[in-house]
Length: 149
Image (cartoon, rainbow, N blue to C red; front, side, top):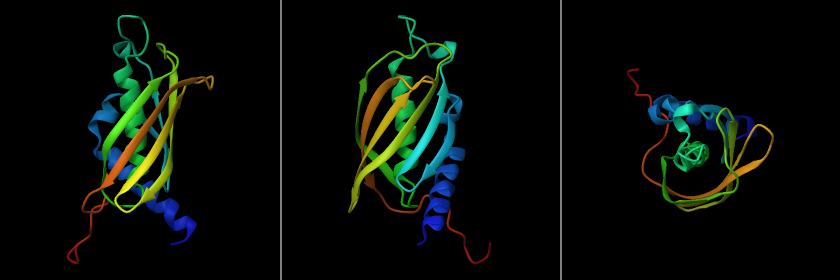
């Protein structure tokens, strides 16, 4: 597969997953880019995402990173799920912040992979670091066409 074909496949997989992902869409996430083993997802911190200390609830940060992880690890058209994730919160995100989660594949072998996500705000300040481990399950990400279609 050529580099162009790999990029196209990754983009199609990410777009297909995102279109079916009501949770990410409801949180206002935007799929910004995707490539083989990588993705970038954006989200703006809304008032309903702010917790009692006046900063973005960590669950939203985790969800943002988890979505970026999902788009990256499913970029090869092989259905893949998380089998473990962790996050370190570095700095608070605040109301109105535009966050970007960049996911990069660190390893992929057999049925498992390791991915790191870096969340930064609009000023490039590090907000959180996330690590996810993936597991390949059966089936493709993209719907398979049948001869009658």
